[in-house]
Length: 453
Ligand code: ATP
Ligand code: MG
Image (cartoon, rainbow, N blue to C red; front, side, top):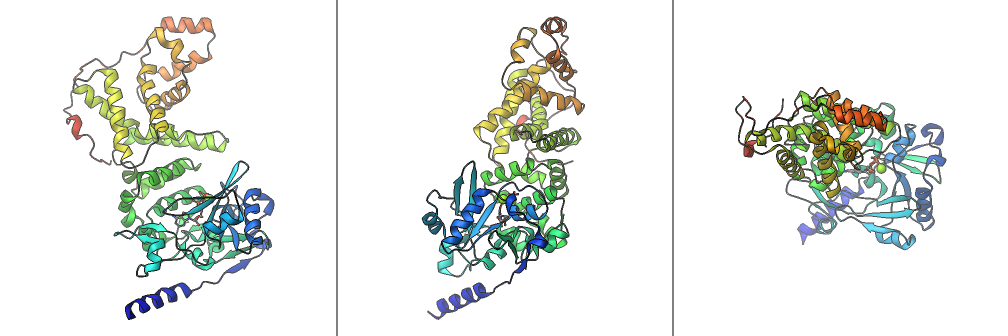
């Protein structure tokens, strides 16, 4: 009985520990409400009219204060998910680990999160709403709290700025505005503890640092490498989401450099051998992807993953061929093997797997085309991606027999010239079947060890 009372008191005293906000006026934060999506403004307005607190928070506020175009607009509110549903009929509650509400608004979906509180592991009530596993990773985070508590639960100070479109004030609880000015990324609270609670914050730190060109403050950097192995405990689905965000944030070149600098590549792609050849293709693909995003073009995450894993496929294919597997099956088996290994770490949807395989399967076919099939090859749906991939490999000085340039000329040529090109095509011979390589290799079963140059 006494023990329970003591626990309650401890719990409530930690919840009383309040931060106070600095209120930043429009003249200082410079946010123009017209730059905010109409959907999120409407949701905030509806919630406020129903008597709840509601703010724009996260990347929307951060990016607007930096003069950037936010990717999305997140809303935080004092209303619980059920209360949000009562106010907004079309709202849908989603998620279990982290319950959220999605409000459809035209083409936009506004994500609405209820204010969270730190939970007390000894408190029975708290345990129901929020849980951590044996290693300290938060497995459920649904304990509702006040705005002050919510600010402390967010990851970086620059992500804990709350904008009220009604008063046009920004509420800053963690000196986020100061860090924004200094282009500094700083974790709220004790960094090691915050990374341990959710190791994905490590990848978020990399992404925001690359995207915003912010430096990580020292305290945020120091525990990063120590905690990084905990990423292996994150579900492949969540890691996959984060990897897609990393590759598609528009600054993939910097992302890759940072992942390498902080020894994170081996944790995300444990079976990839990041040697010079692999790295050169990865960076060329990153540059290409960043350029496409800057030009407002769409990107296919499968293409990037195909490049990331390519050298592993090549290595495996050589080994299989050395062990007597024929050319085409050796490519297919190598691709299958590499994808299966990767899926233990980052989930790959059926569509992504299929696209990657089509790009890979096209490589030997484009390099050593059967003249009878050239015309049909060039009109098949994945041709463009396969061709772009071949060109990138060629630009990275892989031996493609110059077929990237050949296909480039072929596409530009008129039908007469195309027929002539097909007649004259001198295709480099594929490696002979059962060819023995001079170097002694390990058996195909032992090729999955993680190696780093
Ligand atoms: P962007 O949308 O540009 O990728 P963002 O900062 O808005 O960046 P979201 O993933 O949309 O990122 O999350 C919205 C906000 O929710 C974040 O700004 C942050 O305050 C909070 N948040 C998201 N993920 C975490 C996390 N793992 N730990 C703590 N807070 C988080
Ligand atoms: Mg966001």
